[in-house]
Length: 297
Length: 340
Image 1: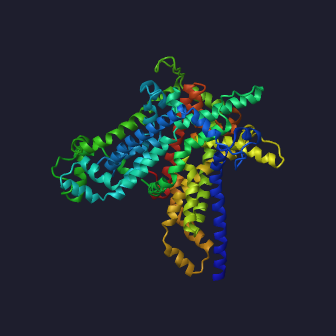
Image 2: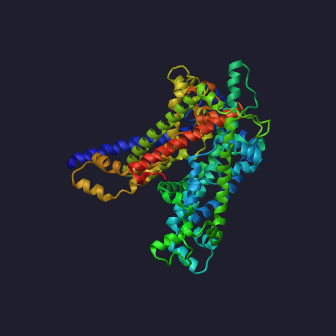
Image 3: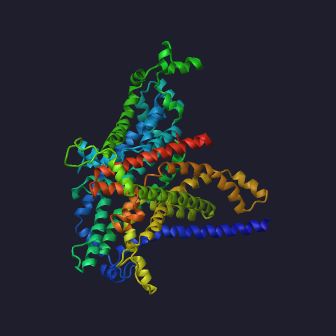
């Protein structure tokens, strides 16, 4: 019996290592492809295509990105601004909401929870929302259009509420009240201090969504100076791909001012760089968020 | 969030005489009665700070989610951006009729639900398998490292996904055709093969989201008490039996919760994924067009506002009815799993 178990255990270990290694490689290789292409000379890509290891090493892609850095720097600025502003505002609102909904003595918390949750069940759809944003709120080409839609999500509010519930015991509210602290003071001095890990998690979820947002730009922004970073990248990739396809069809040669293959890939790395760099440090907060968020709110 | 939700604010209070005193001081029965009798206005004044703190959130959802619901009116009009907002001629159900008769609605519905089912089933099964295998790894640093790597794609934007697809599949210099050329095979024009994209979309969905669900399942596995495994070991169960008879059943509740959440949004497509992979490549629409991409195109490319609103409303309503039905059935079977 014991020998059989050992045998099976070894079999499973082998299987586990094989599957996990293959899975990890599948997750890594696409990034390696982009990194490799960004470090390959453009002629080499045109001639032999993309490789996993640069066929002809060169940093000209990055050089081109930074010779005319205006556009990409501006897009960086827009994204940084919307990410920081949106995250801080959203955190402020959502921590307050989470705190109020976590207070068991707040009578209408269930009604309001449902009011928030219901928006995930039914909605007016994209078009009425778009018309409201553009025709009623006049947010076309404004930073408001980039910040407002992402401020809060029902999921994050519920997550925040659960975090506060688990971090601040109910009795603490009671005793603080008896000591004469007001509702906002309890929030500001106690709840915020005690639920810092939760706030970091929710804040990072929020910041990631803002950083990766391209949809708001594509819907509401016509002025290229206000494009978010991701949408800027999207345009660089797609305008070039579109013109290249047209060129291939008609036999017309490509314009020389088009971004070269290696530039496009370098741009992708420049855009994703901060995420890849910060990832090892912030990853655990997301893991924590998922672990707590999986509990039904 | 259940029954109480619907009953708060109902005018039960009318029949009860007014009584003084805090709810904490009163006996159980009287306490509940007294709570009911204090009106909304009283609460509003008494807890004004709390209400004020909740106000931004309430306003946000009012503007961002509830206001647009009024706009479903456009679904019944022939809306034109140039004429005023309420000048659009009313056409009744014409938009829906067109969507139905042209077969668009059926195709979009089948595509949306089909892809989502594939995402849900494959996503969960693979995530469970990977989570179990990962939890069996014994080298700590390797376990941490691989978990991080498999969670990584969740963090990059969908635009990067389109860069990857471009890098691998573009006709002239893509990695795939480079690889094929090395083996002496001719190049493949993937962008012209609609059927391949069914597979590719599912593949890239899994690539992006597997790590996310894997982390959730991994947390659930970590929560299983060691005692079960010890006991099973003493009883002579080998490792595969221990996984099959302990780990898998213990993941059931996590699985059901995740399943229900995703069933609730089965009519909502992964817009980012589809749009970044397919874009405006009409050749592929038959197999890859979902409700969300159709609505977006009608809005931004063909400017068919009435039609786009109609398709969006259909999506919302159909999804709403689905989730209500699912929730109703779940409540009948097992109340604990009900969403609300």
